Length: 270
Ligand code: KIV
Image: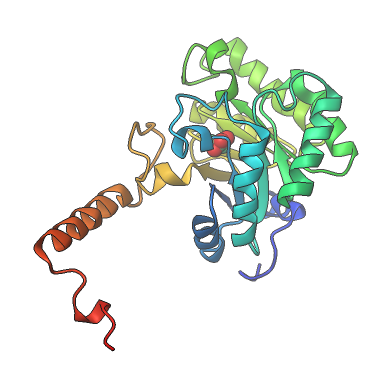
């Protein structure tokens, strides 16, 4: 596929079928979205991880529709080619199919995202079908689902015993039947992820789920070493951006204090 051709919902399945890996990263603002898009990443997720990595909260649970839409609009301006997905925040779809359709519709209309993501397995399939019926593609998300962190008892690896592994595999089947175009599998053993990906009728995108998935997603601020409160085991850090920024800020401070900035190069002459 040519790097400048728009990645569409159909390209997810095309890549699974051809064995090419799908790439996805999160973004919350214009400059990062623009860099990710220009680097040729297939899909950008405006994740509700926003609450933790940008807004400094303890979990994603308090993130609102207004906050998601505000950030998604900025990301939209930076994404020209990648497929843009908006993450439906907690309680924007859980209560009823009507809520789910209304909020998904608002998300798409106001932000310009191409699709939405919802967390959960068989219990949210009627929400997924209702959203898809009005013409909005839905990405599923099972395994460690951060919006249910209290119910799960913390950020723990899921599907470790036989019955929870079977339930997870079943959830992916249900989401496939409901019409999801792909599903995210978060924080599960790599052997289980391989079994699920091999059998799944839709692309499986892993985060902390090993190499056998059809694609991979990471929270960008984790991957570039910008969010340093904690680093999950499954995150590979490709840069130390917080170290670079910290050094720049220190140099700026020292330059001002010593009178080295602004020098002639950065000053106007009459
Ligand atoms: O909110 C988010 O960034 C996500 C990804 C971790 C998949 O859901």
